[in-house]
Image (cartoon, rainbow, N blue to C red; front, side, top):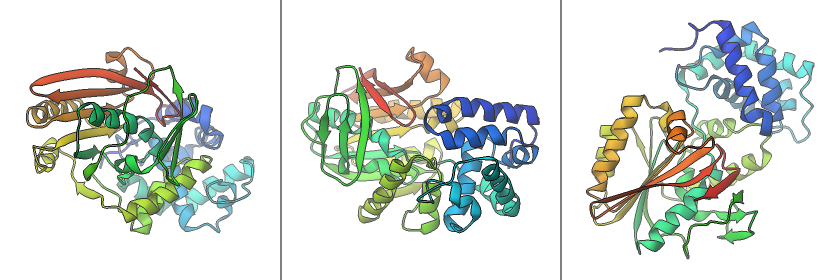
Amino acid sequence: MKNYLHHSKEEIRDYFLNWAAAEPSINSPFYFQLALHLAKDDYLLNLAAHSTQGQPMANLIFASVQYLLLQKPSADLAKYYPSISDNPLSLDESGFALFKQFCKNNETEIKSILETKMVQTNAINRCAYLFPIISSFAFHEKIDKLNIVDIGCSAGLNLLFDRYQYTYSTNGSNFGDSPIIVKTALKGKTFPQFQKPPKINRRIGIDINPLDLRIKKDADWLKALIWPDHSKRISRMNKAIELATENKLEYRKGKTTAFFKETIQSLPKDEALCVFHTHALYQFKKPERQEFYNLMDELGKEYHLLYLGVEGIKAWKEKHKTTDTPVQTIQYKDGQKIEKLAATTTGHADWVQFE
């Protein structure tokens, strides 16, 4: 399996410095400091390079360590993790030294994780745009039953967007009643029109390695992917995992366009369909992305379809002339194809601006 060991230490060091300067510098002081420290250490840079090529090295190595700490909460390093300790220690030189020593002590396990696992974040806050856009589609199209398919679903928690409560802080709007609360800031004055969430008939999640939350190790991996100082996200994730195990989610393991097609075409063609993905196509090669787009066009001839895609890749940003993350929709009905930029947002949907 290909990894990053053929890259120079300077290239890997630059990667971690650039990664730290992006989102962690804004919303994760813990990983910001840890990434800066790792970038100075040749041993840790070499260890991170064992990550499978195509996977984000920083997310993968940091999640690997947190995953093992969730199983070994008595380790000295765990005292520095806000996700594990109620009174975490400040991340100082001693903490950095413990991080490196923990990696050395668990090198075999960490390498195995880097070589076999994937970054499969299930950012529930992304439902802040999924919920109103899909609900508006169902409202305007007078849809009684809707089947939904999540491509790159991870654990499928975003398939439960109608079971959460929403608070849009800027305009004070609230929807739903649930112990799982999705909060985001609303930019601008536009908001999709709807009266209630749609009635979901079937919820299907497709992933190369879907996570079964009834299995502790799968649930721990999902938790490990959350940044340690995002305590509210961790608390909400625990509640969402409990909700997911109580609801009927259908998981399908696969990664090819042919598999997507076979799975989706098993759904009744007289029932409306929504296919969505959030930060999944960046792991596809360019020809594979085009195959996927072609599949949506093909399905649009067979189904009353809403295709909703959210990607932070360069091509999408350039297409929609934005530096933020574009939320794109394509509606197919009666031979018509209506494409538009539905919203812009951030990777974790800290804010949303509907168009």
